[in-house]
Figure (cartoon, rainbow, N blue to C red):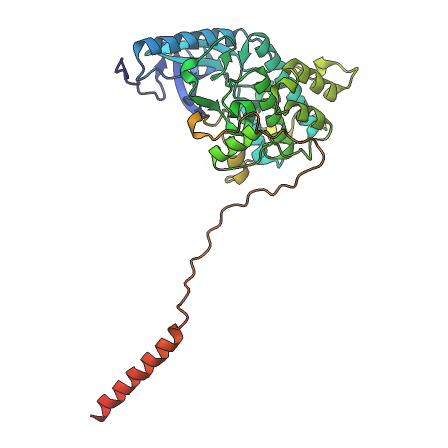
Length: 406
């Protein structure tokens, strides 16, 4: 039952948020709504702002708890100081609603890259894996679980002095490990295609869940589709994710073994994020290489340049079924809308009935889902219809002759 009766202010260009951040233009969608480019009137810099969560129609007590948690989590996220994480500048309250004030990075997302390229070369994805794992290792050390790692939340700067820098964004639904968040236990928040199996079955996200989601994201980058395939029915997809049986990777090259380890259905058997970081750095530079040549450095293609798909001028198809599948269509690289799926709608398998994911061999066959086609409607005549028409025609002809004679 709502207790406050408050209504949302009208948010739009030139709106002054929290008396400090003037909204400029809408950048894209997010878990709780639009993400805006704004001007920080105090520090004269561009920022990205996003509503963390809504307290409209909640009781005063529930609204206070939401605000306190958002402020607490915002302060924790602000402690992250990693070159591969979008910085959290502030958590501002506007009309009682918490908003995230974040670093603005003109960028293209990994989701957009997969609209331009069929898939990405393993050597580029290995660099992305090392850099994002570096940021998430810092997050986990600070007690923060991201909970929504996906291609739309991995950004590559597409212009300026930061060109080629890779960063993970949208800690907007991240949560402190110590937060019980009982009021949210009825829904799964995030993107089903990149869920860990235990999350799809209703367990709370953990650091191990982040490892799986990063593995699923990197798998998608090299294979061209998520590890559980593509399904327009999110409930059917969620059920398949809960089963934990992935499609074995075929194009991931030297990173295949690491991906399979990250995508273990049993969270206890997955590597830690720090171990993932070490493995990808080793794959990128070799056992005796310098991690500093990968971490805090722009992404490079085989020719030593920033990959073509990351450049602002690279063309994005006007219509793309692939873009719809991979979830992310904005040039800014900001995340597509998150999914909140009621748990009571998901026929989740039990742990006992869940079949473990297979190893690389034997390789099961997989047929990608066909696009829906509409067949023209056909009409089937009754079996005796031609005879009826012939008799009727003869009778009609006889009547005409009789009329002429008379």
